[in-house]
Every structure is written in structure tokens, then in C-alpha cells.
Length: 589
Image (tube, helix red, strand yellow):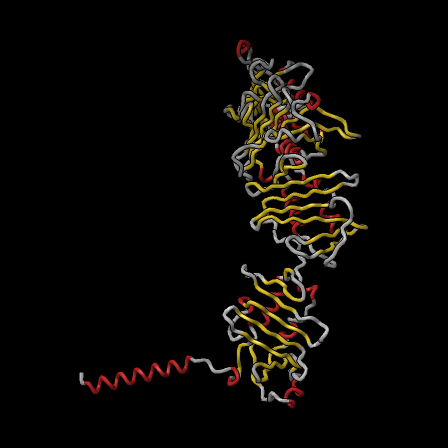
């Protein structure tokens, strides 16, 4: 390449660089037709923001940003600034555009724009030394705009720049008492004086995301009430700011609050004078007063509300419960184990025998479990105290939810009268120090025999019953078998070997026997005194094929007991009418 050509190319490149440098340079403010009010900067990053209204008696306002990036009031007083109002000011100025006007920065221009006596002056400084100052004049021609002056030039901007600054000192001060919020709080202690002068302490700690009480007793806190209480305490607001010099009443403060969280420890002391609560804001020199109604709603009777009255800890018992075990204690009856695989599946008896449950007693049981709520907490009571009945011989109830690995166990003891209420001593096995009283009615249902929960269906036959066959089992099997069936020649049902009309047996078979339910389940396990059945009843088709076999125990004056093929350890008493009809089948006429 020739030297001349190379020189020409270098000259072109140099020219392009010069053009780029010139075009990247921002035009001066006084030469622009439209500018950003803060030159593209943000008030969030400012070091100091200062403004003053035209009233000479009003002190200027000044906000200073700390090392943590949070603005505080530095004029006319030193205090924490309201986050909401600061955000309002920042949003208005950060997004503001100004349009140049033809007004001159002279007496005439000042008179026409209201800048002769500015409505407000505004100045902002950044850490790098950059400073912007504005004078704000009167409203613009559109009504929603306002004149501003900067560096000898008059601009027009939105009226929001002026309105965003029209706040009084009370508005600019942060009314929030605590910086902590419930979600970041790990520990909360509230010491308060009762009407008798006794001081009580509520001490809550958060463990694994759940609140627990350490004082006035140790145990679970009702999660909804605990979250509500902590949120209410940490949401206290200054309803009114007081003079910086406050004369404290004699004696201890009515309430002392300590909140510990990710932001460290905050402490608040509140005194009460003529029903009004007041104190010094944590970490600030300011004093405030809160409404008596707010004070009472937050602090009075808090400990009682915080006790976990739902002892099993389920929010929706009917949908969360997966397993129930009721153990009356050794020698006091059978251990009952009920379980289901999912909410959509039916409950089943697992122990002492395997069997399908009846929905009605299961629903009653779930309702009783839901009613196991503490009516009263017995402070000072112990599981070792014989009067509670929580030692040997107690009733143990264990419940596990679908999402739980381990069951929650309650111990239920002796009954006690409280006025007109019958109550039972109760304690969680994992919290033996917190003894409660629960309704006796709910506990009485837990003491019901396991047979109460058995589904009472004995027979359900979908096909036509054409024959009934009755025989003796075991040693009595040599007795002749009785059969009841339709005789085509006679045109009605007859007993084998006889001719008289037995359509009453057909009606019993068609109307009752094919869909028979028991009145009560009976324990037929070995050793229960039933032994070998008295009769075996076979429900057959017309051709003699067996549809279902029933074993029967005829206990003279008592209801007949039937047992179907599903489980030989469970039988069912039948009603008076069914017992009479069954006896008529095997007793001679």
C-alpha cells in the first residue's frame, strides 16, 4: 500500500473519532430545550436533600443519607425519616423532565413566573461534589405544571415536584416504633404490670419457623395468635410525637418490650398516664404517645390468647388426619388403631382386627378430636400429681397427619368439675409441664369400644335369592339340613319335606335378608364366650349354588348374632324383627 493512501485513511479515522467525541458530549443545561431535572442522577444516591418554603418563619427541611443508604432527618430535628414520604419525594424528582421556556431571568420574567419570591427552594448534593439547586415559582399555563429556575434559566416542570415536598415535620418523621418485623424477629419479650401491680412476662422464641413460649410457661404457642401478637407489637406506631423533654412518672414502666432479630436488639419502655401510653422510640431521642385503645388491644390478656388451645396442632383435622391410635392402658381394653392412605380413601380398623369402618362413628370421633381444646390451663399441675390421673392407667391418644413423620400423643386422665362443666386432665406427651383441662364429652367418645367403629353391613346381595339352606355345624352336623325354596307345583315357597306355604320366608329373604345391617358389632375373637355357632345359613341361587354363608348364634332372649365371610372375629347383633324371622327358620313350627 502506498504511503499517501495510508495517510488518507489515518486522516479519515481521526476525523471519525473527533466526530464521536463531539457528539457524545452532553449539551450544557442553559443550551438545552429539555433536560432531566436531576441530570440523570437519583435522589436515592444523594448525600443531602434540602428544601425550604417561602414562609420565612418556617425552618428548612434537610434529609441526610447514612452509610446504610437510609435517609434521616437532620433539620429541623434529628430523627428517623418516614420511608413512605421519602419514597414519594424520590419518585417525583427522579422521573421529572423540564422543558425550557422563553422567559428571561430578569424582573419581568420573575414577575410572570412567580420566581421573584420563590414558593420553595430546593438543593441536592451528591458525594462526588455534584450539586443542583432550584427555585420553584408559580403555577404554569397548563395548571398542572410549575416554573422552576436553575443556573439563570427558567424551566417548566410538573407540579408534583412542588406537591411532593409539601409535608410537615410530623409527616416526615417515621411513626413506626420498631424496625423489626415478625418475619425477621427471632425473640420477643414483653414485661407488663397487671392491675394488682404484679409483673408478668411473655417470652416468645422462634424455633424452626414456629413460635414457642418460654414464659409465663414453657410450651407451644398458638401459631396464629403468636404471629398476630408479635405482628401487633412490632407494628406499634407513634400516634403523636411529644416534646423532647418528658417528665416520667414515678415507678417502673407499665410495659417493657425487647425484640431481637436480624437487625439486633430493640427495647421499648412504655409508661401509662391517665390511660395514655407513652415512651421513647427505640434508638431515637424522640418521645411518642400511642392511643389507649391500641395499647389495650395489644398488651392486655395476651398470655391467655397465646396458649395453644388446639392441643393436637392440626389446622384442618378432617383433611390432615391420617392415623389415630387410642390406647386405654394395659388391662383396660383393646388398643384401637385407625388409618387411611389418603383423604379420598376410607378409614379402616388396623387393630385389634382388620375391618372397614362405619362413617358415622368415624365422623363423631374426628369431631371429638377437634373438640379436644384446652378450656383451662392448670398452672403448677404435674403428671406426677395423683389427682390428675395422668400416671399409670391414663388413656393415651396418638394422632398423625399425612405430612407428619411422628404422631402427636395426648395423655388423658381423671375427670374434674369446674362449675357446671365436666372436664378431664390432659397433657401432651412432649410437653409434660403444661397440664390442661379438656371437655369430658370429647374424651368419653374416645373410650368407646373398638367395635363401635365397625361397618355394620352383614349382607348385600345383588342377585335373586332362590333358596335358603340351614344346617348345624360341627358335632350337630348330623341333624337334617333345612331348605326353603320355591315349589313350582305348589306355586309358592315351601320347606323341604313339607307342603305348607312359606312365602313369608321368600318375603324375608327378598325384603330384609338380602340387604341386612346389624345394630351393633360384637367381638367374636377366641375367648369371648361365643364358641361354635348354633346355625349356618346359606343364601343360594335357584339351582342351589351358594351366594353367601352366614354363621348364627341364637342366645335365647338376646338378639341373634350373625357373622359374614369378611372376618370371623367380628359379628353383628340384628334387630328384633330380623331375630324373630331368623329363629322362625330353624325352630320347628
